[in-house]
Amino acid sequence: MFSLGAKNPVIGTACITIDRATDDVYRFIGIGFFQNYPRWSPEVIQLESLTDGPVRLGTIARQVRVDQGHRTESKFRVNVFEPNKKLCFSGVSDPYRCTYEVADLNSGKATRLSFTFELLEIQLFMRPFEKLIRAVVQDGADRTVRNIKRLVEIEPTP
Image (cartoon, rainbow, N blue to C red):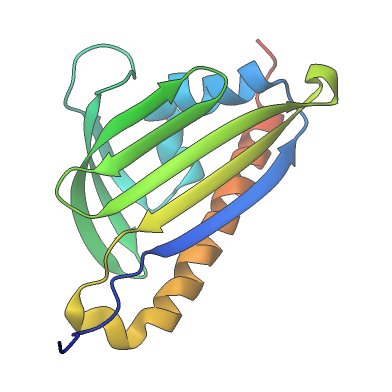
């Protein structure tokens, strides 16, 4: 059968060591998500929770981003919320997933942050640019962990 192109996901992943305890890092990423996400991802120009209460499993949010001059709006749902371990959200109508995982290092004196962004499907008209898209996604993953590290390490310890 004739194939219109690969449907392999585009994945960018990056890891970094942060000189803070795991609970401090997770508090910044997970608990303080709505305050801090636009700080570590300046492409986010608007972010709002569509669900009452704090971030938790099932929280739905809306974001407006400007990436490479291209404005997009999407809704996403928190589908994993494991304190001091993992936060994951997925697009409600757009095929993407973001995962943040933290792990204790050096007896609680540092944290290993792993971030993965998955673009689960590329639209047909974008497939000729797949190699460029993969490079941009990887660059974004690298920048995300560097930004989180910088911001967490300058935050006062609670």
